[in-house]
Length: 221
Image 1 (cartoon, rainbow, N blue to C red):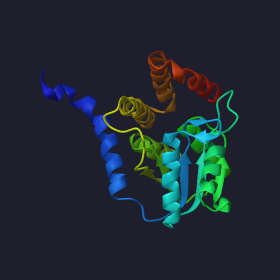
Image 2: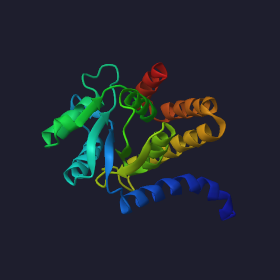
Image 3: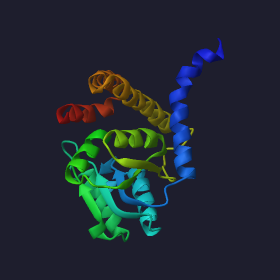
């Protein structure tokens, strides 16, 4: 097989990995706002993946690189705690000034969390978005589509690491998400929604544990 045939398949993963490397290698010196994107929490305790994001936010705060922090993320049916609320408590327990942290407890995906954040706090200024390395490119692009002057700041301690299966799963998920972002930019939100629905159905078939979140997202949008 001609290797050039595989080139289009390699481009999205390469974009994701190169972007994460650049943002770690050349970080922003200062920002007015920092957003910690929520992810799994277990009855008030952040998952290792979520804790890695929060720990990175604490480090940036201690270095004086941000002025105000926002934790975002809602909850699924049956949960007692929101992702944003868990993140807010975690930051406070580690010495971040609670007056400098705001929890935005609605939104069950990146786009929905951004929309709710901007509805409440439209003037964020230069903003850092803290998330996992594989998620950094899509998170930054969605923030910019929403109107933010945003730059991803990937956590260096994400427990999902190459070459573990979970790393490949997240990379595949982000490739699909990046396709949706690109379609939205080129063809509009309606076409992107159709592609996103198709990809979620495929993911739900491959990973049944994701179906509850997909159902909640369908209700949200």
